[in-house]
Length: 204
Image (cartoon, rainbow, N blue to C red; front, side, top):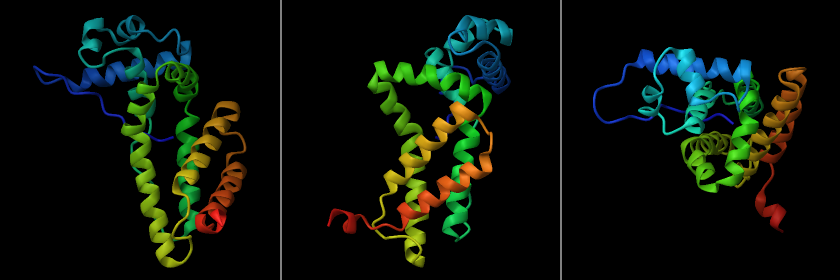
């Protein structure tokens, strides 16, 4: 579920990046120690030692702040392709699992999902910011694999992404990183199978 998140720019004076870091760090700490519901703007301001208006100048509200905190745990850097489809998909699986299993992410994601359920526009904004760039990167990886003959040219890239995201998210929320190596290998084998399957054959 990796998604690159960058705090939103604001008009006026340039922002102090040190204040940004204090806010994000305070939010992460509160998520881990107090949970999503207790991570309010006021609580973050107290922990960061700033006034709440400093947060509102940077983020419209709690949900956006939590998104940038949690999804910013991922650097936005995708695994570097090696030319080995199994190794590459294993690296993606490990990245997704590690990001979702971070304590702050495990604390925040259930609350965020509940918020998205009530407002689809917010979820589609998240898709634009994070998921679609990730799908595009997977598409490039699989196109290169297809050129080498190790993946089907018409494999279902979005299905691969959905399996990758759904399996790692559920695993992270329920088991964290327990037995992660065995889990990542099972999911990788499944992804390779899907990558090698032609959607044309399935349609027939």
